[in-house]
Length: 463
Image 1 (spheres, rainbow, N blue to C red):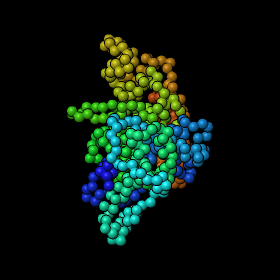
Image 2: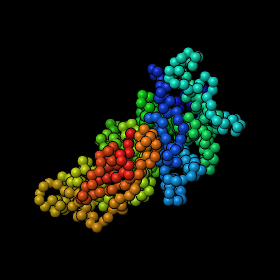
Image 3: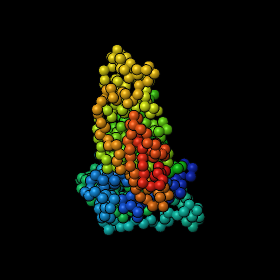
Image 4: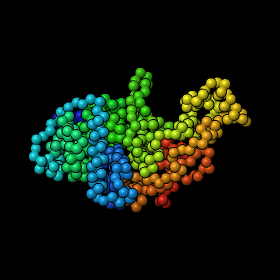
C-alpha cells in the first residue's frame, strides 16, 4: 500500500493511538449520497458526522437548482434533471479544490491500468475486509488474523486503493484536460457516489484533488485530523475546504498575527456562505467573505451539526447600499444590539464610514444627535442624519427555506425543506417577536433584527 494512501488516512482520521479509529465512528461515515423520498433534491444523512461533507454538497446542489436551471417550480424537478445537477455540483466542488491549489504536486498514488469493465464495476469488499458491527469485529471468526484496529485500517486503505483501481485518482492529476473531461468522469461514477462509501470516496477524492501537502500547509494544527476521532464531527478546516477550497482553520477575513504566529483566514468571497451559532455565543466572528456569499445560501453550524438556510432573493447578496454599510458599521460598535452606542464612540463610527470626523464637527453632531445629554447616540437618529431617504435594497419580507439532512430532526422523520417567511426589521421599527430558536440566533449574526415565520407548527431544528 502506498505511503500516500496512509497519509490520507492519517489526515482524515488521525494517526493511530490507543484503539485507533472506532468501528462505530467509521460506520456513521459509511454512507452514500442518497436523496430523500419526500424531497427529490434533498440529501439524507443517516447518522451524525458526515454533515461536514453532505451539507456543503447540498448547498452547491441548491445553488445549481435555484440559479442555474430554468423553470419556477424548482421543487418538482425530474429525477433525470436532479441527477445531472447533482453531478454538476460535484464537478464544481472538485474543480474549486483544483483551482485553489497553491502549488501542483504530483500524486504518488498510481493510476492503475485496468480495463473499463473493471474500473467501473460495482464496488465490493475483498474477502476478510467486509465491515461488520463492532461486536462482530472482536470475534475470532470475523477477524481471523486481523485485530479490530488493523481490520479498520485495512478497510480505509482498501477504499483508497479502490479509488485508484476505478480510475478515480487519475482525474485529478496534472494531466486532466479540462472541466469537460472531469464532468464525464464524474457522471461515469454514479454508482460509486450512491454506494455505502460514496461520501468517504468523495472526501478522499477532494483531498487528492487539493493535494495532501497543500492541505497540511493550510491547517493550523496538523495534529488534529479532519474528522474528530472521538465524536466524529468534521473540523472547521474540512468545512472551509469544501466551501472555499482552502483548508484553513478560521472563519475571519484574511490573515491575522497573534504572538508572532500567522493565522490564516478566508481570502475571497465564497459561492455559498457559512454562519454559526458559536458567533452568537461570542466564541468566534465570521468574516464578510463567508457571511456575504455570491448566492443567498448559507450553511448553518450548531455545536454538533450542519444544516442549510437558503432563499431565491438575490438582493440579500447584492452590494451594500451606503445606509446598509452604515448600519453594519454602527452595529460593530454595538455588539449587544441595543440600538445605541455611547457618544464617546461616535467619532470612531464616523471615521470608519469615512465621514468628516474633525473633533469640533463630532462634538456638534453629539449635541444634535443627543439633545438631552443622555450620553448615547441612537441608530435611527444616526441614519436619519447622515443617510436620509436611502432605502435598503433588501425587501421587507421574502420566502426562505431550511434543510436538515437528519431524519430525526424533520417532521414525521421525512427529510424535506421547511418553508417560511423572513422579516428584516430595523431597530426603529416595531418589533414583531416570533421566537428565540437556535436557527434564529444563528441568522441574527448576519441580520440582527430578522424575524422568522415558519409554515410548520414547530421551528426547524439546527441540530
